[in-house]
Image (tube, rainbow, N blue to C red; front, side, top):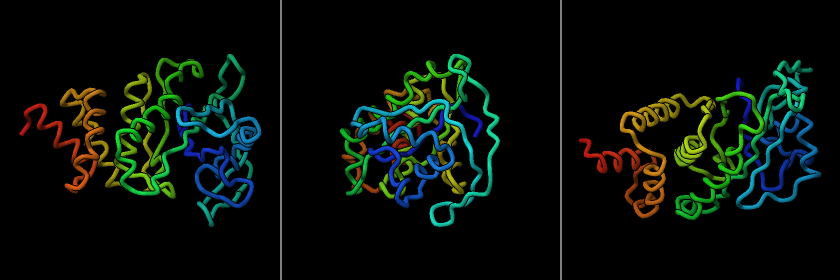
Amino acid sequence: MNAEFHAAFVNKYIGGGVLFGGCAQEEMLFAFRTECLVSMLLCPIIEQAEAIIISGVERFSAHRGYAQTFEYVGPYADDTSIFQPTMSKAINIVAVDALVASVNHIQYSKENIQRELNKLYCGLYNWRKFSNAQRQTYATGHWGCGIFGGNKQLKAIEQIIVVSQVGGLDINYYTWGRPNFASALVSLVQFLHKTNTTVGEVTKILFSYMDKLDEGRTPFEFLYEQIRKKKGIH
């Protein structure tokens, strides 16, 4: 990933199951960037309006596979550039724990959407403190969309809102073999730019999605519909 900021989709108890058999994104990250393990000793439970930034962690291992197929394949030479103020690797892990959508519809409430926006904003708002660049890249993907039950479209919109509000960051969004989702996301972002839709407008529309949930539209479809209606686009 050619980015200084990497999302880590973590458990509220950072590290998750890395020490006792877990092997999802968080545990894999902690296995090949082993300096992350120190955070398990230093960091308490992540509260609702908190995120954890782990800076300068080197990658030591090459790997392949995922979950049951995850395996070590040899040492890794980490050629990441150096962040001069700290003389450490210019890499920052943005550890954010997503809402656990144990009941699917709760993730669409205004309160829980606001929770996710606040959470990610905590992780990204001060990114310039950790970088010499005027503009940087945030590498992310389907945050909280595995065992936590998150809706991929909703989570993508939430991340776009926060990154746009923070400013100075581009997104590398990894869809993990879902080209149709990637195309749909690119089309939505292009539509938002073309219609000069603001962060505030997108957020207000998203807050109203819960009220229309039973009408069966996806978050992307609902955004398109409401923006066209608001701006008189037919």
